[in-house]
Length: 94
Image (cartoon, rainbow, N blue to C red; front, side):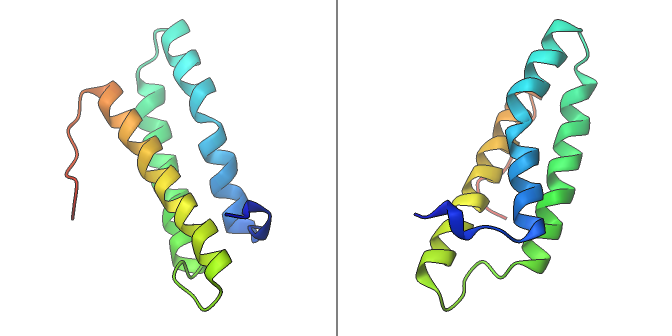
């Protein structure tokens, strides 16, 4: 997939938030601040909601659809990691 197709502000904001995950985990562990993970999960969900509302994921352009689906999967994985770190189970489907 061609992630260079992702240039909308909401796409870029989601990419930035996803890129913060490793640092958030590191800081939460180093500073003994598990609340950072709950805050990050809430912020990620909020940024994802804006992305999903404003950027049509399944569209007419197969390349753009593929790139946006990759973003959706990345958000799913990131949120799953955070929830596992917090000891919270999440449903596979809703």
